[in-house]
Image 1 (cartoon, rainbow, N blue to C red):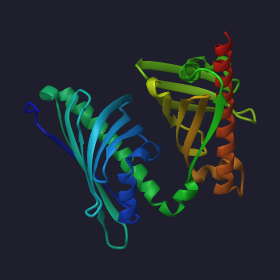
Image 2 (image 1 turned 30 degrees about the vertical axis):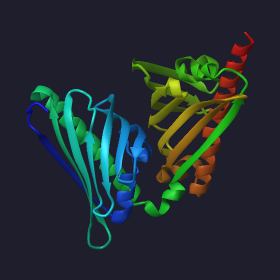
Image 3 (image 1 turned 60 degrees about the horizontal axis):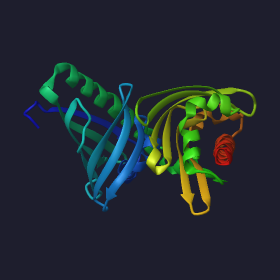
Image 4 (image 1 turned 135 degrees about the vertical axis):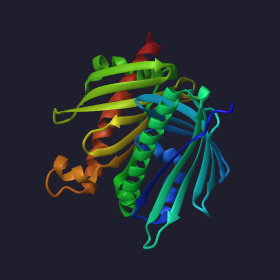
Amino acid sequence: MTGERVHRTSHSIEVDAPAGVVYGLISDAVRWPLFFPPNVHVERLEFDGTDERLRMWATATGEVRSWVSQRVQDPQTRRIEFRQSHPQAPVEMMHGTWIVEELPGGSALLTLLHDFTVYDDRAEDVAWVDRAVDTNSRAELASLKGLAERWRKLDELVLSFEDSVRVDGPAEAVYDFLYRAGDWPRLIPHVARLDLTEDSPGVQVMAMDTLTADGSVHTTESVRICFPHAGRIVYKQTTTPALMEAHTGEWSVVPDETGVTVVAQHSVVLREDAVERVLGPGADLAQARRYVREALGRNSTATLELARRHAESALRL
């Protein structure tokens, strides 16, 4: 630090849920992309039960930002201290604390504190960071409140599954097919339109129109983080179909001595108040789970099969 002024923010929200439930959602940062709107992806680099190091990607005022965060968890006091060890400019320093306090009657008060400095303390940069912190903090607290207050139903609302295909072809060709999503409209029948930008290497922002089994069109927007050396592409839908409150996923290409397994993984939070509107009167969460599992699985398996054909064709050339 070079002496710039420290700027402080505080955001709080009351949550009608047990303090332990609220703390549990905060402590499991790997699931934040599914639970918090701004978060795109979180990689846990180290964790010994208390001290934790995370690589995080999130949207901030329309941009995708990335940083490494050090966290210290204290479940006894329900506090988590965090510090960005490699902040992205114009941020010079970013520290903060999550605090969960138990309130009378079984509810909780959740407080999120930030301390930050920016290089040269330029007014426009301070305003940008303050706006980003405020927007994301409010979104995170509101989303956490909504999830925590439905904690008894979380097992019904959250759905995770995967599909896989074996490929007798090079892993590089499979990954190339999944990475070059801009070509999908001419290669994948259920993709009607796809607009993709990649302003930073490996960070893709895309908007896609997908044809459903009944002929209707779903428009989604996503951020994808690509890890070519690991054969992985993770993504977060920032605009979801009506039945999904949140949707994250991963394409992974796993070579072994006999070939390649390509896997499509999905995690979803269902939007309960849309179930009857989308599926008809009397529909329930169990039907919604089956519908989403079948719809997403059908499309991702079709994409995996096309990736397989692409890779196996490349092998024959």
